[in-house]
Image (cartoon, rainbow over all chains, first blue to last red):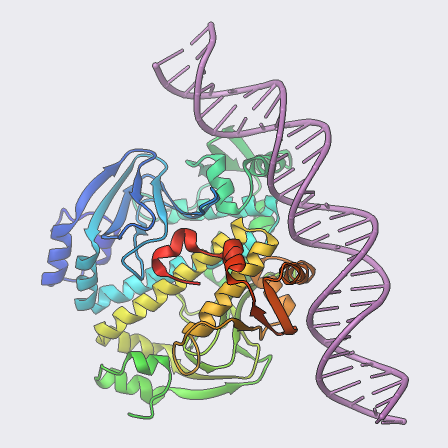
Length: 239
Length: 239
DNA sequence: CGGTAGTTTGAGTAATTTCAAGACAAGTGG
DNA sequence: CCACTTGTCTTGAAATTACTCAAACTACCG
């Protein structure tokens, strides 16, 4: 009991019944090396993942080689919810990843017998949907520099909210575990454009780089003006 | 009982308990004129809507006048699920709209006491999320003509799936109840580009227009080649 | 120390946007 | 019934943005 790990276990800590017990007894910790796939597209998603550490890119690949990254996920985030047995997305480990995987059927049964957990789960799903909506706005309406600024705020917010040890304060130091190509495929741009946007933000002294995989926000207001969501999420107090 | 209407009622037809009874006793049919808002952004979402007829645009507005339409919704679709009391989106009636509205608290209680309905509801939420992912791919990776082709398939599929009288076969006749500006704001393009893309599809005899608010697909294969999702959703058999 | 993968920068090109004008349809009032 | 207004849609030309192609730079790894 006390050794149940992960965000799902935390969400379920106040619930107990045979289905919950069964669910957690079925949970297996798995490790993925950088580059490995947690889920392959089209494959039957038998498993649901609760990430413990590392970063995963969830992507949709077109036949002609185009790729759209739908989200970057880290500790305390979930992966594998689908409306059908198949799953059209590809989940790839960008770093070494630890996750607990649960059989989908066991999760389904636990949710069906534990309405309280199902409610929390519904909130999680809804948040994911709202985050997709943010993403759609960003890709559909913003320019390259704005998209990159918005991306930095997205990472900053996620790195605070989904820190391994639980939610913490936002930091001005942003970790960029993904490559420029990953960022480009997330934002609907090319590597070169992403790189130029970073250079441009650096030149206006809004950010600074130590190495190419982590940066510091020097002028948060500038970044917010470019990529912020205050417009429509003031009440949520993000960024 | 037999007069419960709407998709939610249909989903709940096999369930019965006091909370379900209460939920449906609280449902009120409302009519909205073209141009009216069902939900205003930032407002507390006290209500959840089950659409009966008409078309609604769900949009996110930027302060500087930019607007991104997140989805077009019609009969048998739901509106108003949010993870917080506020709601960052604006729902506008594009035609006259009929809907049943339920207090969110009543829905929440009904779901909390009716796990079977909660499961179905979770599937609906997941489908919405998957549809958002399609949208992200389209906006992030496709060219203007491809986006418009993809949009036609999106409408065709929705108009079959969410027909007023229930799911029906897909038709080659596509209804376009929204303006070119709405389409542009949905696809992350300008009106002019959308118009040029339609002209281009017309010139290649992939589609034909009767008037500017309805078109016929003349060469479905061509449209699928441009905007199809066979790549990653072959197993779902869409489009 | 060279090799490889990833990143940055530059120059030219292609696509979409912007600006501007014209076409079309529906509705209004003379 | 016709001119006129209005809103929407289409088309054209110019400007801008992001993309493509190419080369140089950097860091890491064997």
